[in-house]
Amino acid sequence: MTSSNEVELADRISRRRVLGTTFAAVAFLAVQVVARPVLRSDGYGASGWRAYAWPFNSALLLLLLLPIGGYVWGRGVRALVNDEVSRSNSKSATAAAFWVAMCVALLVYLFAPSVGISARAATYLVVTPSVGVALLVFAWLESRALRDG
Amino acid sequence: MGDQLDNRLREERIRRGLTQAQLAESIGVSRKTINTVENGIFVPSTVLALRLAKALGTTVEALFQLR
Image 1: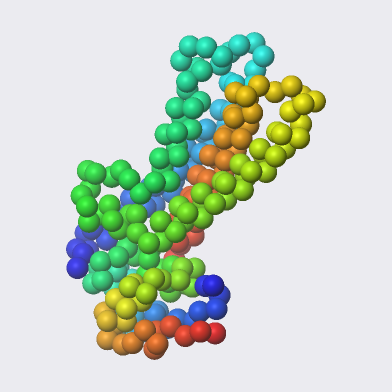
Image 2: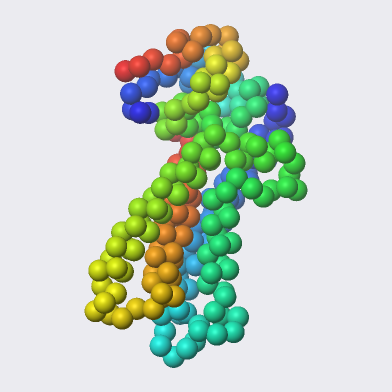
């Protein structure tokens, strides 16, 4: 048995998570499109903290897909937020990201000889859209799950 | 898979005068779970189907039918 407060709180947290995940994904992708920190030839993202910002951000964003966190709300609320539906949505989002990663990796393999791409840039090209797609798909599936209808 | 399964969860819940939140609370799941099952978006696990049926005083077969 769960309390009504826990159910309501879990509902609010789930809705906030949809907004937060969408915002994080859009911001992450926007920064990559505008700044292109790894692909620039002027050495902008090649050294210093900028060299670590992208992998750190990517890893941090991927954590949003895991059923962890929310320790301040207690075990009951955490279980409700990361319920059967959310775990299934997380798996679907991960699967979508896997296919994006595979497609981009194959394209990179095909075009790498003619473009001359570094291992670092290739990794960036594969991981960035995969992280973005994983988060956006997760946010969309969660938003659909929360929609009354 | 979800499109092959019909369910009468919403009808049974309303017949007993329960809101989604009240049903969710009684079986210890989120309102989101009840909402997705009712809308046919999510196919519940066997455990969840059994808990739903027990909470509504009915059987799994009465709640879920293959199309």
